[in-house]
Length: 342
Image 1 (tube, rainbow, N blue to C red):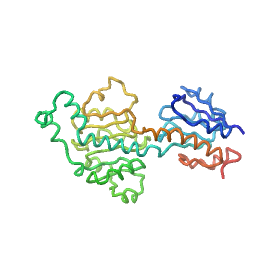
Image 2 (tube, rainbow, N blue to C red):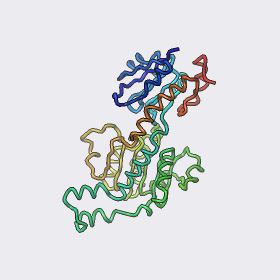
Image 3 (cartoon, rainbow, N blue to C red):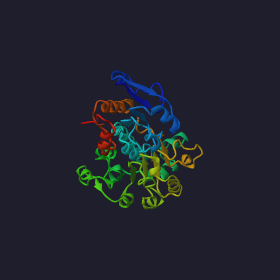
């Protein structure tokens, strides 16, 4: 039997998704840039598998209901908010993501942003470039130096306690005095075993010197950090976001920064992406911006594009995905596909 695998984005040639693996199992692989629901349906309506990047492309209910042969939608990336998982489940389609490919990269990027804020690296760099080198300069002596504290006197608050914040906690232990986390879905013994205190969000905000956001983007978490939350933070605290931009209310963040409600922000993600070049948030010296690059490394990029291929082949071989987003689909999958999976 010849399978059809449809990739709905035409990624650059340097991105290797190992299409040869499909040839090895006699699967026909085709990729094409699709910019509408109709184009995706035209490409993939008869495909047994779809590979997509839901961060940039939505796989909607309308599309999924036209995928009469599809076994799996494999997402290139951790976040899968662009895929209608409920519709996929109802239609007997597995959804898989790449859940753990960049744990080291994002956790290290988060720590780099925290350290940059703690040691005031960007303000110091800017002053030196302006010719204000000497420690006797008032800009350094009276504006920057009094704001630098030892990390071992500081508290880190992690909003969410999934794999990435757990990696952060294991790496930062010994650097900070205290680690707090807010996650209504984590088993309490998980943070406890790592020496992390599980607390309510308001308490975390009021106690933390660095508030680092690591929640998945859902209807529940969209706008989770807004004006009311900024009011609860210390005026000396920093917000770090390496998860998804819409979790933080952009206008509230600008107000909090411009009015001195918090000391600064280090953002790998924004809402929208890319930002408008005239966005006033980009003009603030209190903000570090890194352009949604926390995930990347040579090693992570190889894994990112290899894992979805492996998930598709795994399903074609009669196995369930390893990074299964909707395991509740199993019965409907068996009903849809005559041979099913044992």
